[in-house]
Image (cartoon, rainbow, N blue to C red):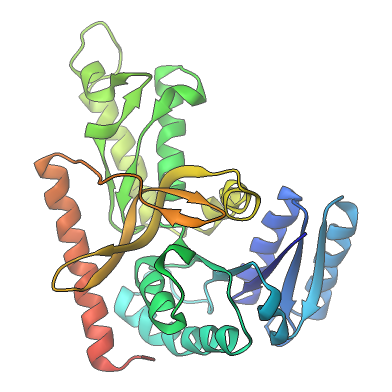
Length: 307
């Protein structure tokens, strides 16, 4: 029986817990007694857990961190969908640091999974505040966008789910489709675009790209909640999962930056299988996104926002 703690705003905690309940893995979900979830909504989740075969929902104190296998952190506050990354960090980082400090003070030695807006920032600060190994901290990042792209390609090309391999890298707000590494079976998708015998052309490829870009501009939590099951299965039950998640990477001058790239997710944490090989254009787009993230981290650190 695995032991997880879910933290965040009442709305996010409720939704994430419900997604876990639907997965029905053998685990205990611990909700902290001092969070914003009211008694009625908490009892709803307890009742729903009683209908499932393998899962329990219970109220817990911070002492539960000592035995927790996973800390699942959602957005800690309800904020405007249009808020900038810097303003979001200004609002959230003090409470985020307090949460991480509480977990570590109570002996937490598990993994941290982030379902937060701007998780490229919070993956970095979760590592900095906790002192945990880098491979024990992961953000959802572009994982939902990658699954969405794969599903849309599957429908467009009328093939099986297992026939598609495609990646969305970068960040939630600046997703980059790595078309040069998109395949249908063993055939590159770009080859299909250049082939007159297929009905997949540059216009349809652009439509898919616009759809993924459109999703980056709206709240991602519904997508994240639906995608939670395979992540839990990988982190807690040794299923293993290869896809795009937000993790820490070397940047320059001994600096680190977090962004989404293909990694292997398992009970041992995150592991980069190989360096992502992109075209010059894709690499330049990714480098621009990383420069923005690294600049934000520098501003936050120099400004003392909760750090």
